[in-house]
Image 1 (tube, rainbow, N blue to C red):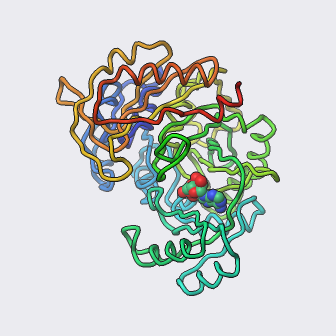
Image 2 (tube, rainbow, N blue to C red):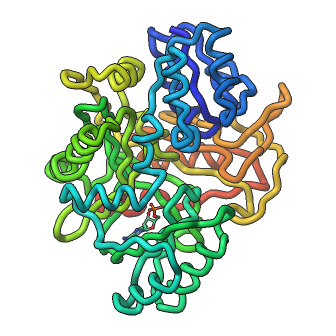
Length: 424
Ligand code: AMP
């Protein structure tokens, strides 16, 4: 098959690495890709917002299957447009992608189907939102309705903080004007990322993972896109996995089908494991970044038939096999991230780092001039490793990270601390 991956981050590098290893993949392309992905696939400069250009590329290059990485193109309907043009596509339709595109839509779906999630209300005006919040008290969570690249959620500890978040969102502080917000109760527990492959009718669970969102050691500092992750997540016992499938994922798949928007693709549930059980924090309609990097290291089966079965509605009798090993990834980011940072600094030592046992390095934001690798984004590299335990995977990942010569970069030094504390 000729396969095209859309996207340019560490998630797409991990997908490209796994797809390139499939005997089903003849020719692999990635648009727009990055310097690491170029080792697995031919990178092509396509603007993913230009669906016609993507379709024209598929026609010219006889693409058999398109795998969409990021949520933006899915919410914009790229899967619908590609399918309408005759190209098999992995990823949900625009209607189904509302599970990530609109928090209000997802909360209403949960309420109507008794899917456990924090109690909430939706608001279109700041005054009504503030009245509600004063009634509820703090801590409380304020969320903008649309996609906001991780910046649309404020967990407020004081009323003043919550009011400021409401004013910021309705005042256009997230770039585009926010028309609606959700205010919900603050959940207490341990967070986990849960992934399920869905085919419109049914779903199968993938491995679980946990990520570290804060920029600094000890889970301090501002939120980021993710500074590291590991799999499996110790809090996700087999019993908890089964509860998440029965109480959250499968009711969602049934509800989406019933409303005429069957969900196909990977459903990524952000969970809070509370004393009462799992609660849905949010849905994403694509693979997680950096969770995918550790999932791909642990996946023993061929990924391509699984993605095809999701697209074709054939997951009912499908099974995936996983290595029992743990996997962990450390994100190396440009100094200053998630605030302002410089692009273009030189990165060396990647070859030596990749030699460490069990290590795989995925690129997130890099470019190459043919001889050298340069930083080209905020999150730049994912140094990943497998090991018998999370602790062993962590030691290998940091031993590799220490061989990378990049004075303008940094990483957290404690990725996996929760899991390692449990292993002890
Ligand atoms: P989201 O973008 O919805 O994943 O939210 C970002 C982060 O905000 C989550 O990973 C949680 O740490 C936190 N969060 C969101 N909603 C809640 C909630 N209802 N209770 C506690 N924390 C929350």
